[in-house]
Image (cartoon, rainbow, N blue to C red):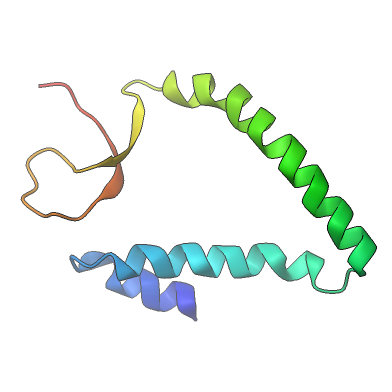
Length: 92
């Protein structure tokens, strides 16, 4: 339901829509971990703390190799909105 509201607000110039879709995705990601015991949950957390920076380091060159490269926090060319979003930078 959170994702549906976020997607329906996507056409408006509000940052709330983007946040709601991300929260919906995060809620779905935690579902497999809800039934875990404390020890197993701590093991997953420790593994994620160790693996995620390495994964980010290895994936960054691949993501930046896109043509044009993906940039975070930039506005779309030609838009007058102050809205910050994930967008493709185009060369003029």
